[in-house]
Length: 323
Image (tube, rainbow, N blue to C red; front, side, top):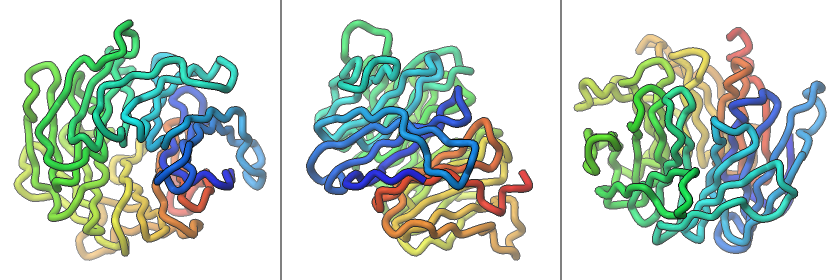
């Protein structure tokens, strides 16, 4: 566990290179006003000891999301409330970012760096200005390569497909999940009216290029098959308040984790029979909204989360120990 008094957690991500390293962004005043910090943390061999703080990089506005480069083990990107995204070189002394990219008109709420296995090196961002943008971090000009419009609400989450180059999904306050192919058109390839309320999070299955999951303000989680997206193939209920983030496990196709404004993290078995509860475990070690959630790609079953209670936790749920 790592406590950051005065800084309330928004997003946490494990390093794609090092199993013991993770990044967390947290904001002062719950992200409403004040600055923020990018914390670089390391797990210790003794799980009873707190997470070790290896670096802290401050920013003068809110930081709402973070993602690691899969090309460089010492580089990550963050999304800011001032409408910019920041690229940080963690080998440099703690201070300002290496580059600041501007192009959004309002708060940037999510960022995602393209997976290394696809052969490209691109950053995806989503904003309160209702657009998603694609950036080349190696480009000299600090401007987006392309802009994708169509959502009529805040783009809360946008994530690259781990399978198909140029493809990403986005979800929005307009209740839709949209799938885009940047190689073909600026128009979405698929528009799914996913929920009757704001959709705060989406994620791709790591095992099937056609499967996505969404989490919503309506407290539900829905799983979608792009080959027939008229109806979800599974709906999961249990959270008492809005589902803030959903993540598929990188180690087992049927395992899913979610976090919520109900202060809990839940682990689900999406392959459970309809007559059996899909909830494997409810984790309630936080006392405020749980905003950030991630699986460790290197250590099966290991999860990190962060909350508005200022705590970042790394643990292995009992239900996943067997994995």
